Image (tube, rainbow, N blue to C red; front, side, top):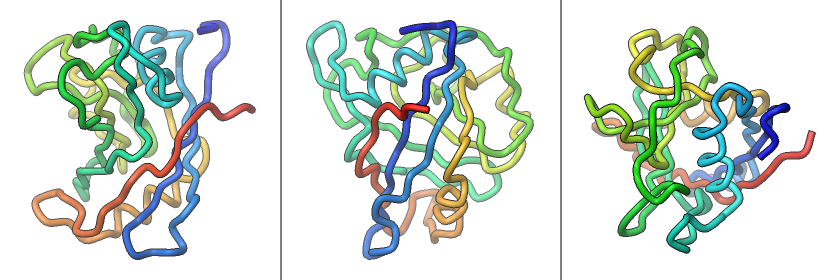
Length: 176
């Protein structure tokens, strides 16, 4: 992946029983110049690539499975057995250079209190989330379609799980 310029990916969302939600597009900018390892993983999963063991990985069809009304939405829990990153195993916390000081920042979720346990799950901030600084790697931002994120935020949730199913109906590279 060219690390001299940022890459862009898109997600299309689909909210259960909402015909108006089809083809809602969120465009994400990846900070691959500063976080090439992390961005490469996210980018390749967005393009439905295989990991080093030959297992296909994709965000397509996966759910937005967490809504924390005052913090973030969470998605990308790829439902396969075994490794869930392009690198096969968990991967490093590359750096914490980008601060979560605004809405629309996204990064990798990992196992709580476990350094270097990144895989495929991601979060998108709904507000500044300084409590994540130095814990979860931030590696991009929403540059278009934040209104879709706000629509997801408005949805009912029980124990942070959306009551209606929210899926990523498609994803891929976005050419600027």
